[in-house]
View 1 (cartoon, rainbow, N blue to C red):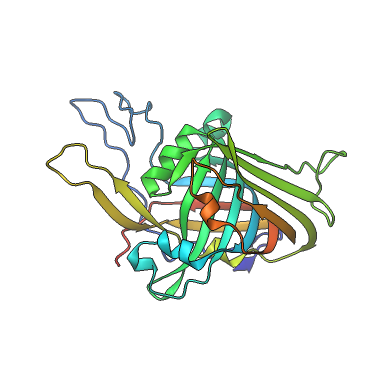
View 2 (view 1 turned 30 degrees about the vertical axis):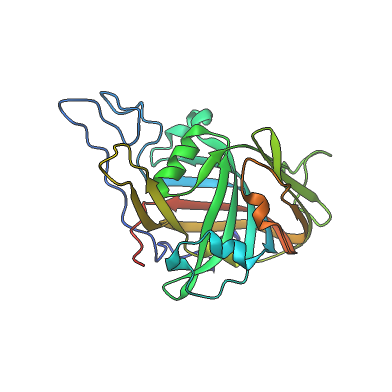
Length: 288
């Protein structure tokens, strides 16, 4: 990781687990086309355009330890081979995203979304890795984009304290400022977090580890099986700014609409608030 002249911390230009950029959309001469459904004559009705996808946003992050057996139960066999100690993180994100031409930034309803992800530490090919067993977002394009990657997103309501740097409601990035995040789905509260900043810090290590997802396409006809493949996340150009750390609180209330409570914190290790950017080029198949 290097520090740029503006004080931002950046990783290498290309993440070692990032695959090549996804193939561009091809338009069939005899019918509608698109990267995802719905298809149309010019392809622009697709809910999600092809990568690369660029992301910038603010993150509220709580590091904790949970039941290692709960983590192990959610991992595919290829990710269970190393030590599983229950290291995990609850990650709230307030995001803005776009493709190379940046058109979404001039139509913000296509760019902005909020997200909650559960990260768990694991091992892949003998190296530290991250798995996201559960995630929620508040926009349809983000949900479908996640499913394309193997990111297990569902729809939910996510709220986060924002920092505007001005006024009594500005929540400045300074010692003593409290930041909170909540997740609800199915009319039930699923997660709540609070971080009180006390010092500038380095980014949490788990954010920079390669992610390994499972792409799952169920069978639709009875004579053919569904498809399942393990893939890497394809993240590159990761950049951090304004990283602060502090004491944290985290709770996952029990609910009949999800498994998040199975990862109830046994120990809260601390919290972070920072800005983050990355580009997803397209993943690659992860051999077991």
